[in-house]
Length: 132
Image 1 (cartoon, rainbow, N blue to C red):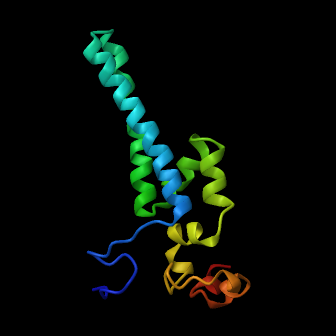
Image 2 (cartoon, rainbow, N blue to C red):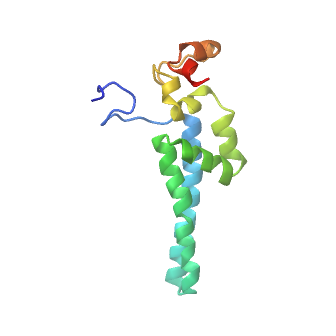
Image 3 (cartoon, helix red, strand yellow):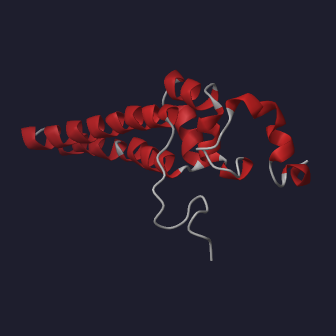
């Protein structure tokens, strides 16, 4: 059973770093836009098939939820399907965004992440030598 101070422990409130939050907001707004557009078409009495636009909002909605939870697959979907902005924010930003999706590489957590010691990160991370 995991201890209460372990990353991802039940009941622990983790908040993503700012670059990940920016992508979550961007992708979440796309989801809300598609759903609102589909509902608007339904209320306006338009073609019933056009209301399926609301279903298109499920992809960005599920992606935003996965990003909040730290799922790596959602990171890939956001980079591939939602433009340059998510790609830049999730790939070319400080290591806090990368640590959100790879907590095993940062055993001390995001709060103690020292950006000056990034050169020694591979030596300190457990299990890195086993992966090569």
